[in-house]
Image 1: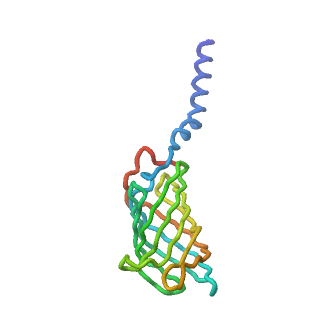
Image 2 (image 1 turned 135 degrees about the horizontal axis):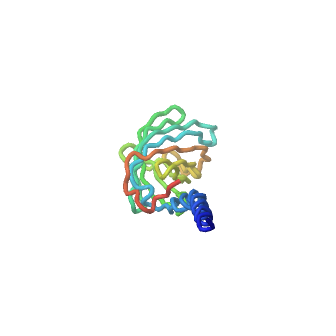
Image 3 (image 1 turned 90 degrees about the vertical axis):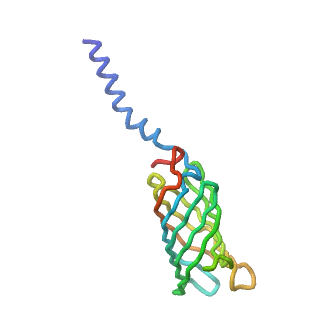
Length: 172
């Protein structure tokens, strides 16, 4: 009888502890491989040049490699002016699934740098989605000198195709 009670208590303890252990084991560190692949994104917000607030929106595709580089294309609207742009940049993913994207936005031909920006992002939902906020924007083209412009832009993205999501992928 005593043996049966001890066995029951052990199994009950094990059963109750599993929900705590399983999620802890599911959380793995992120790396560049967690971001690699193609992503569809939208960006919305406002930029604050000296002339006054301007609404901005964009939709496009990023393709990230495993080595910390990415490229993309987008259709954007800045104050109602629509353009087709090319993006090139670098990225770094931290173990906690936050990341930094540093990029240049070029004209449609990909030769004239229009602006530079920095995004802080976080990978969520098993690295199938990302959220971001632009932390720096510098306008390069059309002005006598590079001009910092305060941004208020956010990004939402979803993975379109895997590019190497593996063991190092973070699962939330």
